[in-house]
Image (tube, rainbow, N blue to C red):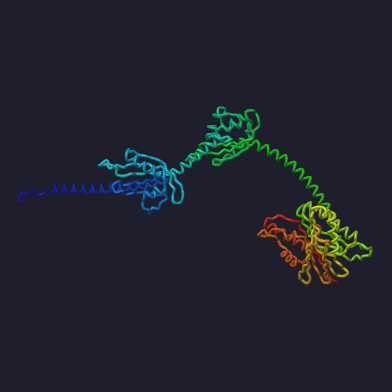
Length: 569
């Protein structure tokens, strides 16, 4: 120890400087190590993102311990949960038997040839979705021994590509075989390609049109370029447009075409091309012109028929009684008369009895007859029946002097059967009706009905007298048809109503159902004390509103006759 030289201050300082440098290098090495770890994590994240965007995944098998690993991208392709343990059996179960055999043969080829091998196969996922993938098998070698260490399977989902290829194949086939013409134009509307459809349609070949812009193509076919300009002006940057154009074929014959022009874009949404589909619509246009001529002819005929029906309506209106004349005998009265068409199968009838009956006996003028009649059908057929019924009623009462309601109905039934020759023909048309005879002197109402009822109200109580279940006219079921005569005391104030079934059978309301007779009876009871013009307006407004609620049209003629008798004064 005595021989040992002491350390000089300079040596101590030098050693301390070397220690500081060593510490600084250690710190730098630590930072570099951290940067390397960060770069590794970033690379892993980028790989995961790229894997998903490219629809790529991979599986690898460690050949030493047979440990299997699946990437997240591969799990996503399989539709497998992240918690599921990797298992090649599950992967093979999704393959067809043929693809499973291909996988086994491909693995053998990779080991034998020490080269990568790729093939396509399908996968049927657990949710029954069918996918197509491309599998590339690759060996990973140990750097020291140069022996295979891992078997890597890189799997790419090519389902969308396969579907696109199938669509392209179908489109190519359609474009080649279709009778329609197909143009592919550049973004300046210059022709780049066309199928044979345009040649078959017009006689012009691709050599005739190659390199021409669309206006030049149409000008060659003598197309109306004014219509074309309107067509192109309407072309949106993102939507297709269609236009009918008139051109000529190579022989100078007129053709009508429908051109549909659709823009196409690249992945950056830049306009690249236009696809034009051209359809020959000449036959359709000729049919439209023929139809237009037929429609014009039909319009003329309809106008003529309508004018005739309007004239018939004036005749029918003249046939109906003048309400001002009737109100001289029965002042409190209204008639709601709404034909479904211009003319009606419903009609109302009034009469004051003749001075003499059928036996020549004198009859005091103290009776008034009111009828509401509903003939078979509506419109023109119903109007013809109404004219027959009106004429027969006038004859029965005013000529033959029959004044009892049951006898009037019987006579009308026989008259209809005779007028329509129903005993010898298959005609079964007829009418339903309600008829009242107001006997002013006796203060009674006599009623008879053929299917249709009489409603009357006294002391705020509504009563109904049903008509017989026997129509007027139609098939004769018995030797002699008889109708029932009902008598009502009207010495107290009485309001009564006659109507056809059109009001109660009208569809409408919130559920599109019939109005129904019960609702009609309740409505009449509710409004019976109102003045007659107001009652008519309420009935009209109610049925119009009923139709409007369900947007229903009137289905039948509508008629309601209401009258009030004041009773014994």
